[in-house]
Length: 123
Image (cartoon, rainbow, N blue to C red):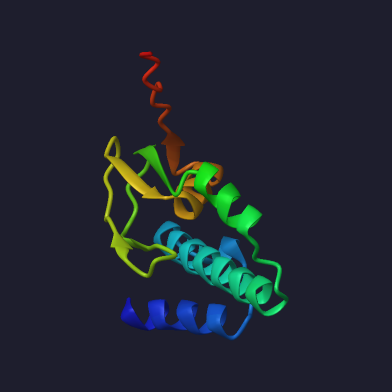
């Protein structure tokens, strides 16, 4: 099991792609999480080097949720967030607040549902 994880991490860090059809559900979640974190990191570095990170970008980041509440539809192993922290493992019907990148990846893949929390509308 540890060897499979090392192989997945090596593929991502070397920029190689894996066919999702060849992966178990747990491997697919790990691969997607690491790939998402790596892509986000690389994009931020690219923008920083190109001088494209400006105050307006920072203000926009404030509007974008950094964490999203999700309800799990499937059991999944622990995942690695873009902050390099470990989240999980999760069981069916577990609810967790995850980094937005991880949460949206899990929602798109059908592993979780986004939980909408009504905003407080008091004056």
